[in-house]
Image (cartoon, rainbow, N blue to C red; front, side, top):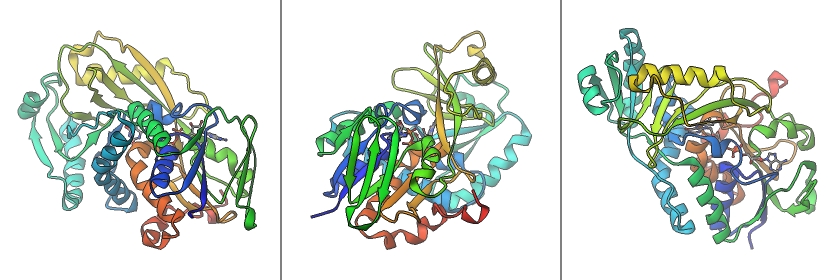
Length: 377
Ligand SMILES: Cc1cc2nc3c(=O)[nH]c(=O)nc-3n(C[C@H](O)[C@H](O)[C@H](O)COP(=O)(O)OP(=O)(O)OC[C@H]3O[C@@H](n4cnc5c(N)ncnc54)[C@H](O)[C@@H]3O)c2cc1C
C-alpha cells in the first residue's frame, strides 16, 4: 500500500499535487485554511506564457515553464474528464506588441534564443497587426507572434480540480483555520495541527501554502523565503471589438475570456497580506488599456480585484524536500507563473512521493528550497 499524504494549502498547486497523487493511488487529504482556490489561484489571468514571461535566457526556469506548458493539453483532458467541467483551455497564441522601434530589439533577441525551443515565432508588421487585432492602436509599430502560448480560465480550472480531487477520492478539508504546529520525523510521519480542523497525520506531506508559506518557517524548522507580492487586475465587460490573441506590452497584458470579458493585469506591489485594490494600481492598467486599445479610453473596468503572489528572492519556485523534515516536500513560491507551472509541479511532487525523485533530481536542483541558505534568508 502507498503512504498516506497530507497536502497543506488548497490553491492550484495543492489541488494539482493532490489530484496527481490520488491518481497514482495515494490516500490524500488536503487541508485548506479557508476556501479552496480563494487566494492567488482564483485571482489569476490564467496565461500559460513561458516565452513571453522569460526575457532572460534558456535557464532552468524557462525550461520548467516550457515542460509544464507541454503537459497542459493532457492535464486539462484529465481534469475535465475527472470533473465533468470545462476549464476554457484556449490556444490563442500571443502577440508581444512594440509601440516604439526601441521596443523591437529586445523582442528580436528574445525570439532568437527562444526559437530553438519550438515556437514558430513570427515578426508581424504594424499593418498585419491591425488586421489581426483591429482594436489595437495605430501607434503599434510591430509585434512578435508566438503561436504556442495559451490560456485557461483560472477560477474554472481550480473549481474543476477541486471537483476532480473529490471524484478521485481526495479528502478535502476546508476552513481548517490557522496552523498551530507541525511535527515530523520518525515512524509517526507528519502531524499537522490547525486551529479549527485539529490534528491530521500522514506519512508524507506536500506544503503548498502559497504566499503564506513564509509564515510557516518557524513551525517547519527552517526559513521559507516566500513573501506576498500583490497583483491588482481588472476586467472590461462590453467591448466594441474582439481581442483574438493574448496581448503583451511592456507595461501590462490583456486576455479575452470566453464570456467576452477582457482581463487586463497586473500590478506588482508590496502590501503585506493586504488584498485591496488601489486607485494607483488599477489606474495604471486603465491608462495602458486606453493606450493600447483607443476605444477603451473612456471606459471603466467592470471588475477590479487583487491576489497575493507567492514570491521568492529570485522569482523561482521552491520545489524539494525540507532539510529539517525530509518527509515534507515544499511546493511553493510560484510567483507569477503558478497556473502555468501547476502540472509540472504536480508531476515533480508525485515523483518524490513515489520515491522516484532521482528522475527529476537534475532538473529540480535549481529550485531546491535550500538554495538561499548561504544568504541566511
Ligand atoms: C493578479 C494575478 C494574476 C496572475 N496571473 C497569472 C497567470 O496569468 N498565469 C500564471 O501562471 N500565474 C498567474 N498568477 C500567479 C498564480 O496565481 C500563482 O503563482 C498561483 O496561484 C500560486 O498558487 P498557490 O496554490 O501556491 O497559491 P494560492 O492560490 O494562494 O493558494 C495557497 C493556499 O494555501 C492556503 N493556506 C495558507 N496558509 C495555510 C495553512 N496554514 N493551512 C492550510 N492552508 C493554508 C491559502 O488559504 C490558499 O488557499 C497571477 C497571480 C495574480 C495575483
